Length: 260
Ligand code: NAD
Image (cartoon, rainbow, N blue to C red):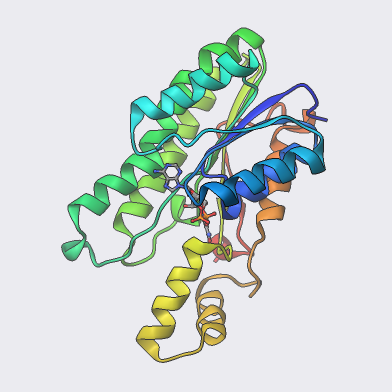
């Protein structure tokens, strides 16, 4: 389905981004992986996807907290492959604290990586996508792009901003062959959430298993975690012809969280 197409997935050395990259690769897209981690482990991820999926996979370690690096990632991809078809803005970080204790440096870092990086990437990618008259931009937001929780001021602000940016880009590209949508996952058991589970377990003297059950019980009616592979499937659907008229919207994959 995606043979001949080129996809960037930011933050794809781990968790959701890796699940999305694997699915786009399975469907035939050449890939640019991005994110931090151990160089040897990243090379194993890169070469495994390349050999298992039979696609070309390159790694670019651009730092998504720096606008110029984000724009550089897009430029380098177009330089290497001669095109850019799919942009998945996925890199993200989390930090929790009451708003009056929230460290300003953490606020800035979350806004930079979870929101501004998408602005820079979209701005840099659109001229090429418009020239090709086809493009898919998928912003990985969150249920926290639609509703709030306590102690997540920066994350909720950034994710609501990302849903807003998605609407504007959807409008500005309407009819051009480019679509822009947000995906809003509920709890997904990745390193980002594992840390929150550990914090709750430590605070409440619970086991990891009990703390995981507690966060699901609090928010996610299905009582099951969403998987990175399921989110890969959602992004693949947005890249399919069936989704040609879906733009400027947010799709929840949250086990019923935001239906409440
Ligand atoms: P994760 O920690 O497993 O992965 C985050 C990825 O982003 C990693 O590859 C990391 O190296 C990369 N990254 C972090 N800072 C970076 C930077 N400055 N430059 C480049 N790469 C950077 O987390 P995840 O749970 O897979 O989260 C992925 C996205 O999904 C995030 O935007 C997150 O907000 C969103 N999300 C996660 C959940 C969840 O429950 N896990 C729910 C909703 C939304």
